[in-house]
Amino acid sequence: MVDLRRQYSLLKSDIDEAIHNVLVNTQFILGPNVSELEKEIAAYHNTSHAIGVASGTDALLLALRACGVGPGDEVITTPFTFIATADVISLLHARPVFVDIVPDTYNIDPARIEEKITGKTKAIIPVHLFGHPADMAPIMDLARKYHLRVIEDCAQAFGATYRGNKVGSIGDCGCYSFFPSKNLAGYGDGGMIITRDEELANNLRLLRNHGSAIKYHHNLLGYNSRLDEIQAAIIRVKFKRIDEFNHMRRRHADLYRTLIRRDDIIFPTELSGCTHVYHQFTIRSKHREQIMQALKNHQISSAIYYPLPLHQQELFVSLYGDGEELKNSETCSKEVLSLPMFPELEKKEIQHISDVINHVS
Ligand SMILES: Cc1ncc(COP(=O)(O)O)c(C=O)c1O
Image (cartoon, rainbow, N blue to C red):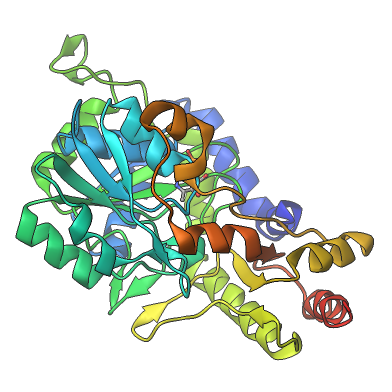
């Protein structure tokens, strides 16, 4: 799905030098690369604060903690996402409340959120799935109306924009993952939280470091969840090129759309006012299995994100019982197929993949 060697070959000398410099400087924990990357990413989003943490999962967990989510609370989110969006809610002994998606974008349907808000609701986690922004305006309206926190799961959407604003800068917190296959990535785990709110930022800095601002003095129950200095150095090299890389993904998406000619395929949409960054190029078809098999026969990877929506996962059924039917998520999970997508993908490869798909009978 993603050939990570190609980007490494392209950036090898800069990445090798960045890693070497960390080894020579020996400031391995919360060193200068972490603080510089935090400044760079905050500026990119036009926000005041960015806090590097150990993973995208921890970014969500710490953001929920900083927003005061705890036992007995409810947090509204989408069932059509990676498990990390919701398991962090349960880890805090709060309860995820799943709201169905809009099939066009695969993102949470804002029109269905209000009916799920109760006296226990504390926050909403919209996910900008596959790189397309969730519809943030109505979500922010509801948050204001009911005094809810909004934590954006931007793990798949670095650089995506919604009505002129970068995702992550719209809610109270934006949470990023630097998992190696993400649009902006390290060579291991890593994550970041961005926020405009100084109090949240101060809290997050404590939470990531054992609840401590002054060494061996601890103010609250925290975690060891710091972004690794070597990862930060690598990510800084790639960050310089992120807009160019996202642009390449968008060009590949256009090419797939032009070259794949089948009536049974629904292409990803880009809503007006949104910039999609195509972390995934995800099509839908009732003939998904045949298409997948044909690609496999030609040694082409494809993947199903996600085969089982979260409300049907054993984990959540065992915790909360059978949830209600969420039709759009259930249908999409049976029809979606993600095709190879990464900046260094070549035109002739997209042509070949499209040819194979066009010839499936
Ligand atoms: C939508 C979403 N949320 C959260 C995460 C968790 O990020 P990480 O793997 O860095 O913990 C991921 C990625 O893996 C993701 O795709």
